[in-house]
Structure formats: structure tokens, C-alpha cells
Image 1 (tube, rainbow, N blue to C red):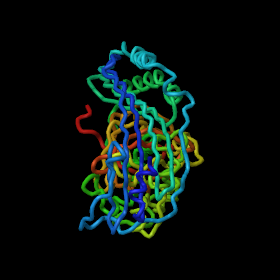
Image 2 (image 1 turned 30 degrees about the horizontal axis):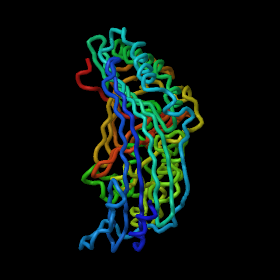
Image 3 (image 1 turned 120 degrees about the vertical axis):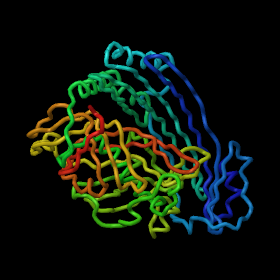
Image 4 (image 1 turned 90 degrees about the vertical axis):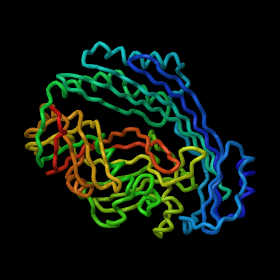
Length: 457
């Protein structure tokens, strides 16, 4: 069918025809009760072609509706494209345990048992779970070269409201990746939820303000992940630097900085679609370019931007396989995949050894970042003081705040762990939420400012 569509557009210098199918099964629970069970499929076709300096995009549920448009006197954002020969082939994320190997009733029972394990805790105000199974399938024909992909994914979102000692906090956690039900089984969800409830309860019961001061901070892989995604991945998107995303999601500090060192020697940030098990997994992008790891920051230096065929040509570069679309009716854009700080050789205990006074922030309950991805702020939830190289008592809602180059330059050590967390990355107009993974090691930052949440007592 794609070949037949392609025939109508084959006269154009660049033509991309795509069939794209997304199947979802959502289950949601509130305090152990099933509140919704929804299955739906979004499936259709799209064509993107380049003609006389303009990139056109068409989409429809049926192939018959796709026909070349007439000529328009418009000025396109694109000035050309990287004409690297497309790479054909197949890729697939394997399900070790197929998604349909458990019945719906068994899955409902599974999630109810997670709630039953914590429901008698008097500190728990409310508890919700959002579960999604997604199977994304696509066929793309780029200048008559075919790409086929299939990626199943599992996602679990957890939210719990906890009250203790006249303090209330909402804790949110995300678990997931590509593959089958082995992703869910590997999460040890019941045990994970029990551990997190206990940890938040202890923070609310015993946590004390740390005060406002410059100090050493150790961030977990969860904090490293959100920082890698928001303050490195997004500003390194070529189309954002050029201003194409300005109205939707802001600009980039790289429009001014452009090159040079923005982090310490131990800072290496990678975007790698080929990581097995990643929510952002793929082997060939939606423009037929082979995927590969991209070192955005290498030893603290700006090294490589994220590009598709159309942003790359404006930087006199080649696409590095970063084009993805969320659904058939969305155009491919420059997108992240699995984005992370690269780990080092140290052990976690070595990060703590020479910290006389500081804070370990294990999880966060809030983050904020500006439109340039320059100023950022993280409010810790599970957080603990560090004294003389040892983890101590809980700290109540410490706030880490600073500018991206300052924070990246303050990182003087990373450990040898690597943890990942799923996310849904928003971009574009119409908007596109696309699955990604974000992560990193535990990282030590020297002499950074910690503030307090107003009214935390």
C-alpha cells in the first residue's frame, strides 16, 4: 500500500510515506478501585514531501485521501535537506513475556493487591495508579526505501498523597520501558510502593529544614535523568535552537552560547535510541536515518546537537537519526529518545566520603525550568542530610536552584550506577507526547545553593 501512495509523490526530491499504528490499553485505579479500562487504536497514513523550498505534510485514515496539494506561494522554514541515502530494515523490541499473557482480570487483581498492601497505613490519604500498555507499529517509505518498526511498551504512573505530623506531600513515581510484562514484573511494584510510602512518611514525620546556604549536594539517578532531559536534551534540539519551537515550548540557551565548555570534565550526556529496554527505543528514525548514540556533552564540552534531515542542513551537518512522530497525523520532529548522564567508576559511598555537610536528594516532588532551559529548580521529596560522609536524618523539601552551566560545572564526580525512568516528552503544534527514557548515575555537585520551600513548617 505504501508503494502505491508513493507513486503519486515520487516526482518530488524528498518523499516520505508512513503507516503508523498505536494501540493503547489504559487501566486506572483510585484507592484500589478500578475507575477506567479503555482500549483504543489510532491508525492511519501520512505523506511528507519537499517541493520548491516548502515541506508539505498530509495525513488521513485511508490511503485514498492522500494526494499532492496544489502550488502555494509560501516561504518554507526549510532551506533544504540532508540527502543521505535512507537505510532500510526492520527493528523490534521483544516481549519476553507477551502483553496478552495475563488477562485483564488478572491485571486488575494485580494492581488491587498493590493497594491492599498499604491501605491500612493511617498516613495514606489517597493512592492512584495509571497503567498503559502501548504497541507502536510503523512502516515508513523514504525515497522508496522501506523501514519497519514495532515497539511494545509498559508504563506505570503512581501518585500517593501522604499526611503525617500536620504535613502533606504528594509523591509521584513512574516505572516502565519497552518490552512485555517482564517490565512490570521486574518493577517489584508492591514492594516498591511500600518502600516509598515508608520513606515519605519518615520525611514528613522527622524532616527538618536544612536552611539556605551553599553546600555540597548529591543527586540520585532520578534527578540526573530529569536534568539530562530538560536542561540538556531539549536545548540541544536543532530546531529549537533555530526558533522553530519558540511559540510552543521556548528556545535554547545554545542560541547564544553555541560552543565551548558548559560542564565539568566528568559531565557526559548521551541520547541513545538503541538502548535495549528504553521507552525511546528505535533503530532507524522516521526519516530513514540509522539511529546511533549522540554525545551532546562530552567531557564538559558542547559536542553534538540533535538533528533531523531539515535542521541538519542549516548547521552544515548530517542528520543523526533524531526524527520521530508520535502518531500518523503528526509530522516527524527532532526528538529525544533515551537521554542520560554517562556513569563513571566511583561507588556511591565514595561520593559521600569527603562531604562534611550536604544534602542527598533521592526523589523530587516538583521541578521547573524556564523557556531557554537555562534557569532550573528542583524541590526534593525524599532527601537526607549528609554529615561527615554518612547519610543522616531526613531533610524537609530542600530546593536546588541554579543556571544550567553553573550546575553542570559544579558536578565533580559521578558513580558507576545507571538508572532509567520513563517519561512522556511534549513538543510541537499540534502537540506530540512521545515516549522517552531519562536517567543517569548518582552525581555530586560542589558548593551549590540550597533554598527552602516557603511555609514548610
